[in-house]
Each structure stands twice: as structure tokens, then as C-alpha cells.
Image (cartoon, rainbow, N blue to C red; front, side, top):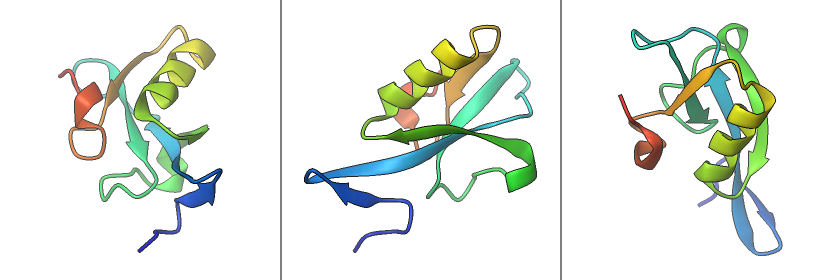
Length: 83
């Protein structure tokens, strides 16, 4: 079963990624997949792009916004959650 945020492209699942415009208590902006139940409302998130892997979304966030700190969501991106 595919969810709305995943598409089939060259045989691979890809997701839309966003980050929370508000920071957590450590000053990090959390990166989420669109399918995450903890995804912030559209008024409090910034679109990062459409990626096959979470590390690509994290890299894009750090490249596009080098003056901000990022952390993966503990629920949808646990491999990238650091605090």
C-alpha cells in the first residue's frame, strides 16, 4: 500500500521532506517525512524536497540553510535523531 507522499520513480520509493520552522529546546529544526504523524502544520514547516533517502534530506537542509541546525524526527527519521 502506497501513501500519498510516496511515488514510484525508477522503481524506488521517494518521500517529501520538510523541516519544522520552530526549533526544539536544543535549537534544532526537526526534519520530517510528509507521512509523519508529528509533521508540523503547513504554517510551521518548510519544504526541503523529494528524496529517496533520509540522509539526502538532511544534507539538503544543511546545504540550503547552513546557518540553521537540524535533527531528524525521532519517529520518522530515527537514524538521524541526535537529541
